[in-house]
Amino acid sequence: MTTRTYDPLSQDNAALVLIDHQVNLMTGVRDYETGELKHNVVALTRAAKALGLPIVAASTARDTLWGPTFPELVQALDGVEIIDRSSVNVFDDERVAAAIEATGRKKLILAGISLEVCAGFPAMTAVARGYHAYVAVDACGTFSRTKRDVNLLRMSQAGVILSDYATLMVEILKDNARPEAGPVYDALDMPWAKLVGQIVASYSN
Image (cartoon, rainbow, N blue to C red):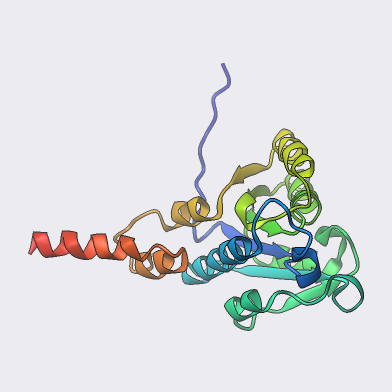
């Protein structure tokens, strides 16, 4: 029987990599409504910033093919440089690969459009290079159900860990007594969590 270990994500071992959340790519997404996908990507970014995670952001062919990063994400990134490149896989761009390495983190949370290319190729590359790769599936989007289904399977077979954005951020939070809890739950659009905490506090006084 194979024994599996659980090494949780933390503020000290994780970084966020956002890839190609661009206007012209968003228009082709079919597995999420545009508003829902935007919400999820922005929530992931805001929660990562609240937790102090390093963030690497990239676009591809911004001026010729896929257009700018959608403005709500640019605002959430709040000054984080978006590295524009021509390569399909971000690891094939020396600047992006160097930025990821410079985080010093071995656990990478990736999200991108499209799921199977912009998130999938670098996630599988990361695993091959000795990183632990996590894909926040609901902060990605793709263009058909077939692409989604077969490439979730492909990534899983390659050793990529699949999850949703909120679970990954709460795993890093770890303890609801931490001062970051309120900002993280706010970022995840879960203000009820603060309300529950306030109710519990009032009963304990």
